[in-house]
Image 1: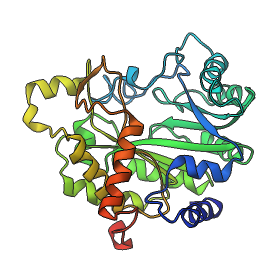
Image 2: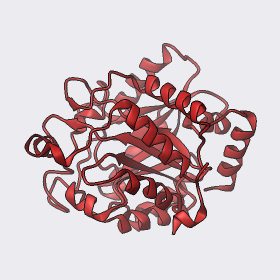
Image 3: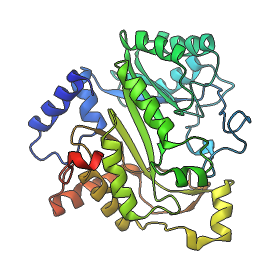
Amino acid sequence: MFVFDYLCVMKMNHNNKDIRYNDLSAYLSLIFPYKVQKISLNAGFTCPNRDGTVGHGGCTYCNNQTFNPAYCRTEKSVTEQLKEGKQFFARKYPEMKFLAYFQAYTNTYAELEELKRKYEEALAVPDVVGLVIGTRPDCMPDALLDYLEMLNKRTFLVVEYGVESTDNATLKRINRGHSFEVAQEAICKTAARGIRVGAHIILGLPGESREQLIKQAGILSSLPLTTLKLHQLQLIKGTRMAAEYEQQPSDFHLYTADEYIDLAIDYVEHLRPDMILERFVSQSPKELLIAPDWGLKNHEFTDKVKKRMRERDAWQGKLYKEKEEQ
């Protein structure tokens, strides 16, 4: 983590004696003197795990319709999507600034000049103060890292990698198309350029026990990650995983809300104390969701996590030990 970012986290913890974990909004408030909101974009990229470069059909859990709000449509330019997203949020917060979030599919999977053109288009939109780029760890060539290193010197930047699991057997089962070692290498190479790095993890993938997941927190803590996103496994209509669940439901453990709250807290207690936690859950569109349906909005779930952490006197890093990184 950057020295500045580390000091931000230490200041954040000092300012709030009852803080239980490092959340993204508090972290951003120490970097920006105004409220900042991410705007999701669909920039028209595809995925090497769909077009045959790595594989076909994509990851077994994936349906990209679950990721994008209504304004994210590929027939609209990056500029148009950002303007519509700004209008949506600015009604409530007229002074708000924005991060352009390249979210759908693999947002580093194109020729370098096309990538640069789309990133620069986003940064040219008024009130856009940085980029978050979601991608796969096997899609980060050195030439792009060279450009991102320069870009990072003039704007706020996070590269967010879909890691999903640290277990190679799980990654193979979900047809991820890369190993955990590939993710490790990409994270380390990106952080070595001074760029903030995020990771995305799914808790509850088939075959992964609670004990494996707790160990995973220690493994991730050994990596130079700035941010981490967690979310529960969701079975989505139209995915191969949904068909697998229908054929063999005993292979899956779908956590109840209470079970998952306790799992998430156990996980967070084993995480490195300075990591920024972006979220605990994801909320797929109800018309696409098969299970689990907890009937909770993201903020309602987060409130329950905070309440349970107070009840348990739990906090991020409480059980973290450096030897867990080995």
